[in-house]
Image (cartoon, rainbow, N blue to C red; front, side):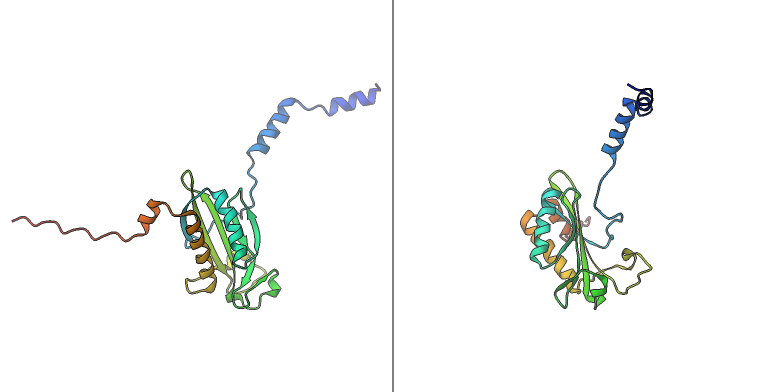
Length: 189
């Protein structure tokens, strides 16, 4: 073995502990396709009887059945996002330059998060952009669709289909019911 080859091999030696640290850091680094922002607090939220992976997988097929295209989906992360959809033309818009009616074009995002074992907290966010401004991030311009908006109705239909498929836990059903007024206390004689 030549002197140069031996010196080179000494330069490239890495202690085993360095590899262990690298593997540990790689194992602890989260890899996610979720966006780096949280859902809007005004988004539609429901608890379902089903694990997030199952809900996300079914959601992916339900979105396609509603004639929407999935732009991003990851079963492991519990995230589904549709492409922009024009509710008047009933057509997906792939590029911003194709969007002719901003108010009627929306995107729906779904976050399926673990709630308690075997249940999922699904957050549905139907959004549209009232204006276009390329100098600002897309998220800054988005607004939650009102209940009268056709996009909100599409999102509600998807959530209702998921409720039928998975069911809603009894505790979540009881939370949605109005509480009965307290009974009058008897007056002392």
